[in-house]
Length: 368
Image 1 (cartoon, rainbow, N blue to C red):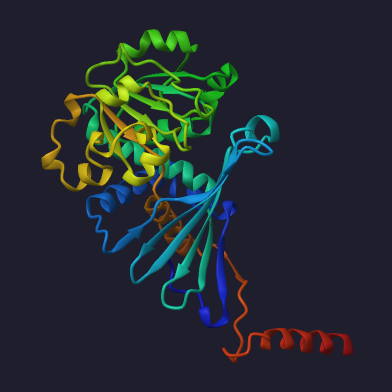
Image 2 (cartoon, rainbow, N blue to C red):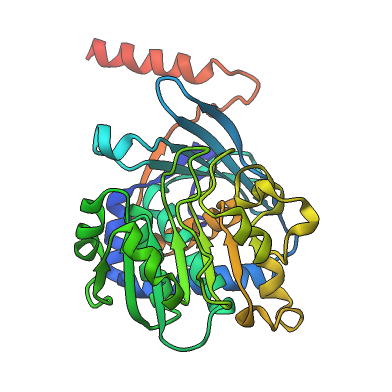
């Protein structure tokens, strides 16, 4: 993050979706995602738990007034910043309210003072970092050649999954399906220009084509207990699956037979055991973590030759990395709004001093 925030004046920098739009238009979406993939790869490869301390997310899940949750995802970069992303997941949002199912904001705190350094847009950034994390893992687990990519669930997350994966592998063939056919038919128009042509198919047609797919992404809003969303009995013996939609206790997308057969690569073990595909497994049934396959590639050279499953529940460290990348570009372009959210008076022992100053200022204004 920029060091320009003047915490003695309690200024907090707000980087909103308009600022992100300026950054993406200036940088280019392809370039921004390429940079994000590189940052994530470097962050995972050099990860040190003494330097970056993360915790599994926690929050509230509920069924009233409908299925939903609000969670917080903390990470501490020692000596620098604490990042807390607050995210809401409400799968009825697109259909009932015409807004995304995932809404998020990231707050960044200075570890010298505890002051709030910045509030950062995270709804778009969450989608970008999730797609980019899948690309990083796919790059380690799929053949280094043009691939056939299958996508189950053609909503918002499908867009960033496909785009990010296209930055590490040429997509020779793109096959997509969704429980709502309109989502599949509109997917091509939501993808960045120049992407592979979308073969929009029904789920049964998709199932017949599974044996031809090198990589499959599942990014659905399946209800808890209603999975699996696809059967993989006919999948290639070297298929790689990015399971993105399993992010809630009881919510899974994969058939258990595939989960037990594949090498399961969790992003964050403790979190995956609670709400990922791994929630149906014992810890000793898991394969190497995302960090391990990046930091110790010499120990995991056979991943391309076997069935692999990336259990992508979303890691708070990814949110910090993407927020910092956004902030660096915003610094370069002079973006962001500085606001005074926190009361800091000239007397740190008098919490009411700023209120008296405000009363005095209002009195002077009235007198004038």
